[in-house]
Image 1 (spheres, helix red, strand yellow):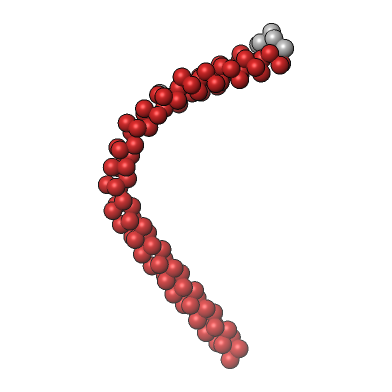
Image 2 (spheres, rainbow, N blue to C red):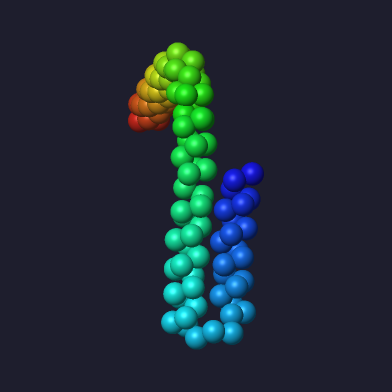
Length: 107
């Protein structure tokens, strides 16, 4: 919801600049003034939302941490297994190639 509001303000400001009948200097001063007003009016709301939401975010982060660590451990283990399988296959292929080369040379 807030994201839509933010983008609406930005798009409105851009459209307003494109169709503004004022000189550039006046328009820039007006944009600066309106931007400052916007920040002044919105900042308390943003701070309030941040204050309200932050404990929930911290709680979720704390609850998710064991799952994230377990996932990382499993991913690391799977990566290591994959690396070992690739190395074993490379060694097997290299051995087969060496055997074939020796057979060809001896024939």
